[in-house]
Image (cartoon, rainbow, N blue to C red):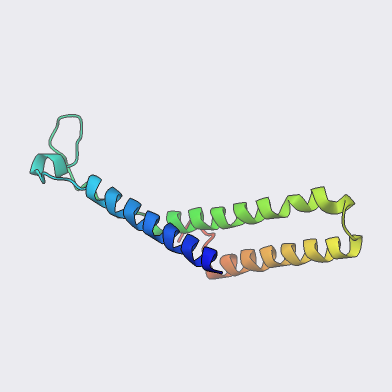
Length: 117
């Protein structure tokens, strides 16, 4: 038990030291107007470099990542079919696919999958 506490304490100390060092080393020391302005091939910028990001595009990207990760979790089911009980395999596979379809229906119902307003 004492070894566990010591290892947790050492881990916390090391991670704190690394975070403090990274914070100190990554700070900009000189705040210059030219350095902070956007660069457009030597010309004066025509507009703000901080354009608002499309929330619709962000939502589609997050949905893609969620379903992509779920598909990678679904793929090992094809590998373990020979090593598991067939009824448990089917129950697990169908449960996972049902969860995917419920999530897809929810996103479709909320209008997140429509590109045109």
